[in-house]
Amino acid sequence: MKKVKLSFLLIGLVTLASCDEDYHDEPPPPQALTDFVLIDSYGVDSGYSPNAPLAIDPFVGAGVFEVFWRARFSRYYRFYLSVSDTPYLSDAIPVYEVGCGPGQQCDLEGYALCQYNQDFTLFCENGPSVDMLDLLYEVPQTVYFFAQLCGAYDCDYRRLNVGMY
Image 1 (cartoon, helix red, strand yellow):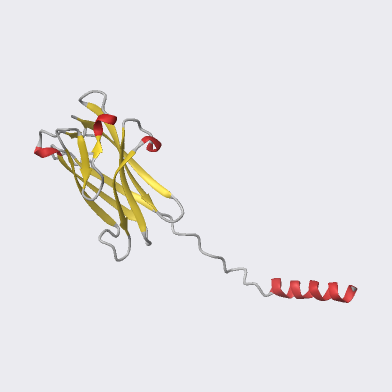
Image 2 (cartoon, one colour):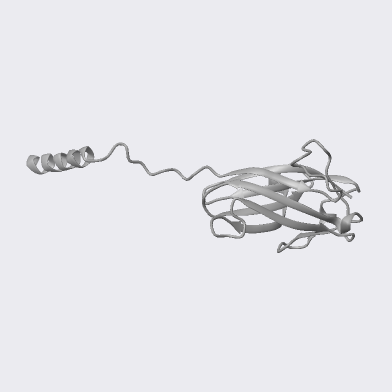
């Protein structure tokens, strides 16, 4: 019996000794939303003027505004744009979603064209029409746009304050 235990112990030690200590599974690459830019109804670009107030007005330029993002991620990811009346992502309502990554329409950079209408609805390209009356208590009011990039393991996000008219 002692020989059997000793044999298993020797086999275990030989197996451990043969392991390559330098080999480890690589962790997934860090994903990062490196840039989130909104160009408002008046043409104010948050990328060029990060401290300038942003405003989306349905009576100016038909309420059209643009969203750009840049990612540092080498794999497939999902991009989400959402809006909230609080500064908390957990309270946000999704308005746009798209799959991005190698071989996709949006790889490391993406773009969405959105519109805020006079009936207080907002939509972006393939996203749902969102009733902003659920979020707006007065006009104008500050809301928070969130850009979120999610890979297989976790998410990264940025937030912009925008005045809604």
